[in-house]
Amino acid sequence: MEGLFLILETLSISGEIGKKAGLYLSAYAKSHSVEPGDALIAASAAVGHLPLWTLNRKHYPMKDIRFFSPA
Image (cartoon, rainbow, N blue to C red; front, side, top):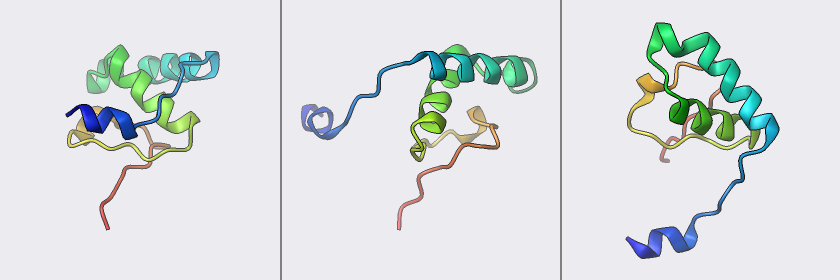
């Protein structure tokens, strides 16, 4: 498991990510039970133009999220 963390890159939470996460919470917290952690993860992926790698797509109803898809 430690090897996994050696190959991952970190992404700092910026003001832009925080604002986008807040927008996601406003839009999806009640209707889809999106929580702050999910909103921050989604916002980080969206702002960083990165695919989101998850097995639980129902937590990410955002239209601008791109999901990782294995080849």
